Image (cartoon, rainbow, N blue to C red; front, top):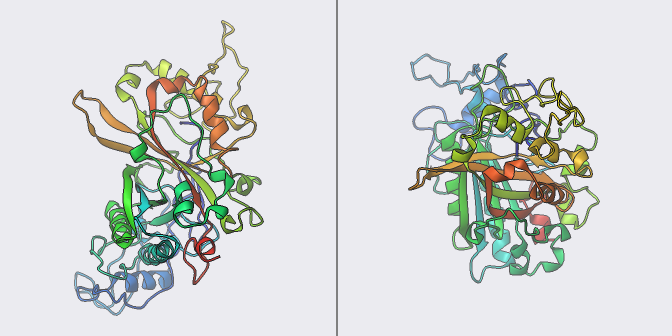
Length: 455
């Protein structure tokens, strides 16, 4: 787990989000939208929508450390202190905004957020293609509104009334069963065929797969929950929740400088994630515009796994034992062969006794693309903690989400290799699994999945 993920990412929109792992941080550009939101938010001061529009026109002040510096905005309204001509300013974390109408759906290359929700739905009995199209239309409209910092179109709960968009992203995908339920079996991609069984799997079918999948991320917990609640309400009678999981990551600005995040084992998690700057990144992660089926152009495939970490067992290991399991230093993520976090790993280096410095079964060795025929995945996980059992063991671990143009060339070969002898496998348990086809972003005037459902 520790070597295939990174929080380095870029947004398809013109904004630059705070990145972890590459030392770059900035505050995002806001959408140019200065009208009122029409949702009853103007009575108690400036509306969220007007505030965000004013901020977009005025510009942002970037903090040197990223995430700590706010920005000034101006409007005809008074702020809470009564000063004329000033409006309340959103902090930079709240002001960050991702665009909805983009080439690739959001939530794939965006910087990983502090809070996440994953939820799968099954279409209701009797619901088919028509109902699915109406649902995706509703969901797309809601996602666009909430990502812009606006209220939902109907019966908004006001949970996020005082907050900005907070880097909210909402991502939609289709599961294997969706196509039979909607009469679209001929449009089902071959790449969506069920994943093979792995010897390390202990899967709960009730918390696996699903007809529809939604990934929600934001840098504010209330903003994220607001989106989750709105998506659930929009499902109405067309779909029911199959399973839902909650996750978290380190908050932006929590460290002295941007850095690769740590997982619940305390390991720096994400050093070797492929980067959008690499020339073959799009080829590895996204379906080409000329790909098949055509409705998946610019889309990607998400593998979702709930991976429980057996933390009580892990924490009994000495520091050296933990580092040997991973193949990297716990303090800074550097390979055991020496250097810094980004130093290439020397797989042939031996110690004074002639033993490999990076053990043969170390997780970082096994997951390297050059050890797996070039297979690479873009990991974008969240940690989770769902309480403490009667035995005192925490139900905690990783909500693993990885992206690739073809899971049979991405996730599957890597997981098969891990299945055959990863030292980390003793300390983790794969408890649920799903595979989803995530189409490209919706163009202006479209909803996500329209090319499939109306093509």
